[in-house]
Length: 295
Image 1: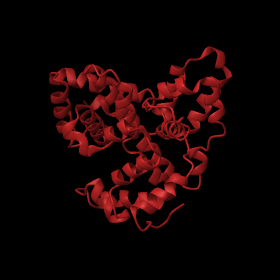
Image 2: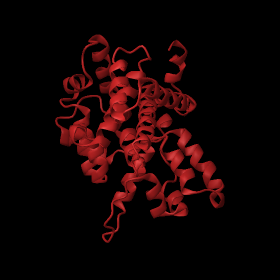
Image 3: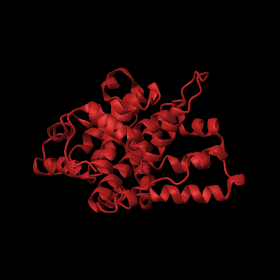
């Protein structure tokens, strides 16, 4: 575990590139159960499990890129496509004996809670992005869903491999309520986490399309990136409780993006909040749906 910041962005990227990505114990258990029914399952059954776990999603995409045949011209940008390319049997052989977050962070319970909160928030953002993509008739909504799910992967990696630094960033923001995340990250690490995330995405050769969808700098040029940015922002603020002062602006931005009435927009948001709430046991953190009765 790192206890002090590394000298530069490149050093961080090299360190994390070699780190084995741990996944949720729930993911391991769900995959084991599916493996027992190998003749009865489909790639979609596998995909549903994987897309609950950002770290497992990242593992699958990295694996596909590192095992890409020289003759393969098209990039694999969705988990469903990845599983189809691999086949069910080879998939299970490739992802055996996975390290788990719960074991990796057993000595660091605060870090485990930290990464689970970010993963829960990421899943929530992915649900918003998926719903809005379908409303906008995006033919490849899975790409936008994955981009939202992985948008804050840098923060997850920090909790996994440098928990004391992640705690410092959180404490800075708690002590300074007006401080933005990027400012706190730069003060502790020397750079904001999205820069690390983009560097890792390049080093891991993640599909160029996903790299673009995860890059907030593309927001003004791409409605699909704007979808991801809005979904991540709404999930981040909602995680603080539905009283968060930034949420009215998020609702208004979502309404303008979707071209719906305020009531229709809130109905879509509420349904995704409830869907995320039904999945709370994946992460063991209080779901946003717990605050719905106050609305």
